[in-house]
Amino acid sequence: MEEGNKTYQAIRDWLRNRGFNAWRKYHAFYLHAVFKRRERLRHYYRTAIRFLARTMHEMGVNEVFVGYPYLVSQGNGNEYNTNIWWFSKVIKWLGEVLQEYGIKLHVVNEYGTSRQCSICNANHENGRVKRGLYVCETTGIKINADLNAARNIAKRVGYETPIPTKILSHIVTTNGVKPLTPMEGVTVETPTVKTPPPKGGKGVIQE
View 1 (cartoon, rainbow, N blue to C red):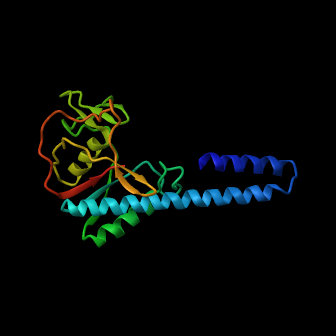
View 2 (view 1 turned 180 degrees about the vertical axis):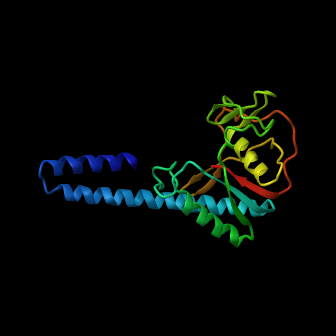
View 3 (view 1 turned 90 degrees about the horizontal axis):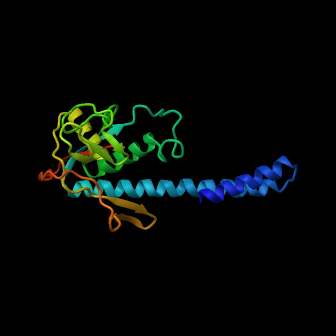
């Protein structure tokens, strides 16, 4: 769909710059494509939020803490230039759905949580060796980078969370949310320590 938008936009601009009135037709095509993309994104967001709220309710979660992206300008951000989502709308939708399930939502400043090590509490400048992997330079333990930041968010509000031995991954499709299974030969880097998972209670979301 993104390629289609660019194509319509390119043809529209070419025609308009050369004085052809036909540019208006391609401008209409472009606006329609943009509208479809926006509505599809809205559908994905709402589907993911509903699934997340229902799953946390089934797990016994009664309170959720969401990381606030400190360096993101909320006034200028939108679903296209802010990591393909816009914070205020998503949080509003999430809060409304969580309320239906009796779950409280809190927003926490997440500044520095990606750099800090949730295992030894030190700030490792080179801890995040790649997008999805964080390595504690003190202990050598490897942990999913987003999980590391989420554990730091939990600490900020006074909760010590164990390192789960399994990460639940899903993908949002037009037909709903489906479990995401790594391709054969590809594994998700997680700690080797065996710690029992939490028995519900609190949920932490990091973006």
